[in-house]
Length: 158
Image 1 (cartoon, rainbow, N blue to C red):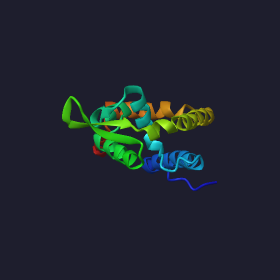
Image 2 (cartoon, one colour):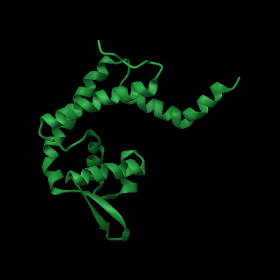
Image 3 (spheres, rainbow, N blue to C red):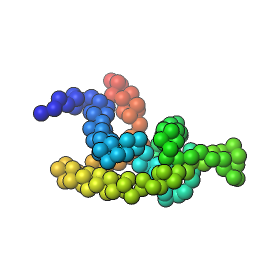
Image 4 (tube, helix red, strand yellow):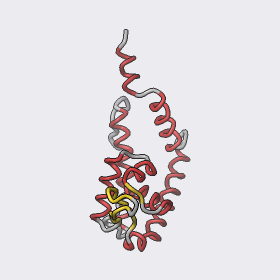
């Protein structure tokens, strides 16, 4: 059996689970010859496919991450030749992120991996007491209603 983080160290445990899941997805991409493709690129690719070129702020909102995280991911994807940054024709101060022909050429292979990942997640979910995405959504909503820092502060009060 693997050594697992202390269950009381929830942040460490969450990072460990994310590393296990994302690490294996990354290995699958690498085995399939997608050596420059990262799991964190998939939500961006899906958003750009659905909505077309987007500014970083719009991309961040579509993916559900911070502006900084979206910007960093887009920069990594640009280095891999998967996205371009072009001036917005309606506002030259903004840059639009769009998929490159290279990314579009990889879509059948990427889509096959997405489908396999969804099937693998369904199999994993069947082993859990509730689907992982459902639980994590529940956690995010609860922390949204009452931030964790408030919960910690309340625990300090006598």
